[in-house]
Amino acid sequence: MTEVKHFITAKSDVISIVTLSEGNVYKRLSTPSYGADKVVFGIVDSLQNNGTEAYISVLEFDPSEYGGGTLKSTVFSSEKEVNIFPCTVEDWQAALASNRNALARQADKKHGEAEEADANLAALIAAAKRATDKLNMVEAETMEEAPTE
Image (tube, rainbow, N blue to C red; front, side, top):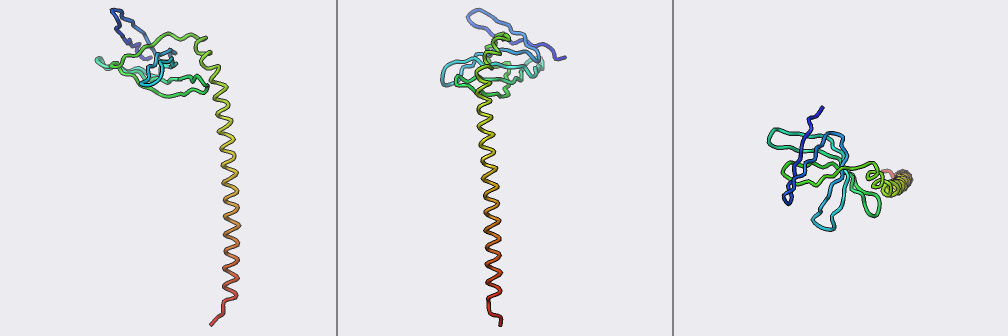
């Protein structure tokens, strides 16, 4: 069992301690360098601490306002301020609900694109074979018609 780690954040004379362990689901305030702040969801993958420094490895889901969202692996060190909040089942399900359908549509679209690319490749291979066969026949006929000395 992995030892429970504490991340401490000090703000305006208030200290908030969030205790994390592997498998915890959380919400995090993300403040990108451009655009508005947003909430992302994460699952703690691992926690490491050498006595002076700590880091957590997480898998985060960033829901998109347009649906779809992104999933990525992220690492936070104890040097970076991280605003983490508890996540309820309702929070998680609400974030996934709109994105689930969009991701399914994206997967269907990509599947259709892959099928179309496979069909185009098969047509190209067939055309290349026909052209090669035709060129081989023309070359053979030319060789037969060539005068021998």
